Image (cartoon, rainbow, N blue to C red):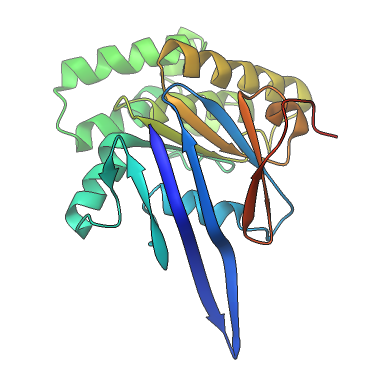
Length: 229
């Protein structure tokens, strides 16, 4: 379970104080697929960085299964990012001269998983995201955008994280490929009991999530259970 309590992040710009995240609180039960929508500059990426321990809040806290992130030393935060969080980015952030298989195996190598186990798990994950076997050994720069995003999702699942944070995962994809990625994220949240939080401008994606939030001027509100317009 992810619990966010009174999270605030401020930045100083000259004589102004900016609050892209302003007293945000919410709880996500394990296995929930949730989305955050909002205009550019509304604070969505800042909030995602705070949840992923890529940034520290000015005040407030994030609890993962009851464990406080605010109280963790830097070494433990690094371990938390490696072990408990999976990241999926709009730009994929894969290593282009490595194969799809090697990209998925890499987080497990950092975590000390034996090579045989790494390869087997990477194979299983790439099958789950429906990447054809012959493409699993291709270099990333020889895959389409949709195929690269599937690899990125498999990589995010490599260390069996409690939480996956996805920043505009369909932003660089055509509509049909984006629909496949939406269905994939939905099935993965159910099958792996993984909490997935997606920041998106894609209304089709947001409308298929279990819970939908809107971030506006740093304030988070939950959308009612109806299609976004």
